[in-house]
Length: 309
Ligand code: NDP
Ligand code: OXD
Image (cartoon, rainbow, N blue to C red; front, side):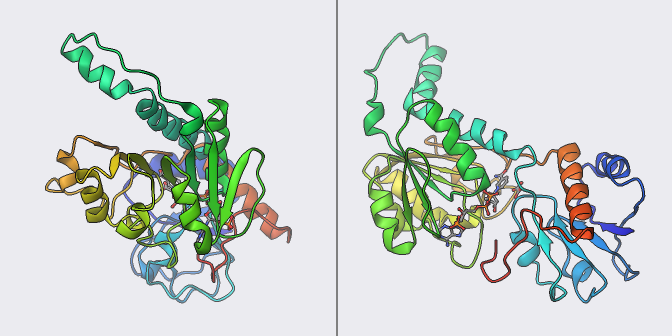
């Protein structure tokens, strides 16, 4: 079995040894520009179009992340009928749960305010917020969205969820489709975005949509930077409609040093680390999915090319 692996400059040795362990029979080679030799599988993250274009020999393309926008939007003429398979959880769910719970609790319990006060030796308390009046809205009810919700429910927050198709989830007020987005937003004091980036969701968090959140709402984006119209988010914070935001992803990464987000104190930034790909778990998942596909069995995370996720 021949596998081409795209090196994006991160953790190549770790990936190679994990793949050697999980796929001992495979010949894994690092793809170089101009390498058109046959391959059964490709393992990629934001590949060059030339790596995947015109390769009818491939049996599947595996993403090294949960998102596949970097593959579908790479400009590659993907071989017809070849499945694109994403990571499903693979150790990212718990990290997302930690990240979002941390951001929500920091804002809800004012830990950031108290931390700043402590630097000034300032002993001042604020009244508690009412949890029942602090519903959290999660955009995206897939693998990661549901794991986030599980963590938030642990702290007894009321949760709203929005997805493309109607869903029933225990103790979650669910909404689906664009026609119900306004009702979902109006009912959410914190907005968490964990959607895939597709033609339907690009720029979804724009002025019109974010203005539907209640006055003083808080935004957490752990999905993709291009979900947010950044100047709209910033101006809604500066105008006081939104209380602030925690952002892990940006339309340009690394975030340029001149970007105004850096100097807005109501925005907390992290460098796309909300859920980091766990190499060992991911290599095991990919190997398991290759074996299942070879046996003709269905696997989780096969991308629907029409939906784009
Ligand atoms: P899933 O495919 O499991 O879930 C996607 C969810 O989004 C589904 O509930 C789907 O609805 C919903 N959705 C998609 N399109 C629409 C739409 N147009 N309108 C309403 N709902 C929509 O994905 P994951 O949970 O595994 O991952 C989500 C994203 O998280 C990834 O695509 C990636 O971009 C991001 N991510 C970010 C990371 C980080 O470190 N910042 C790390 C890992 C992932 P339905 O259920 O009806 O199909
Ligand atoms: C992913 C990511 O999609 O890390 O997995 O962003």
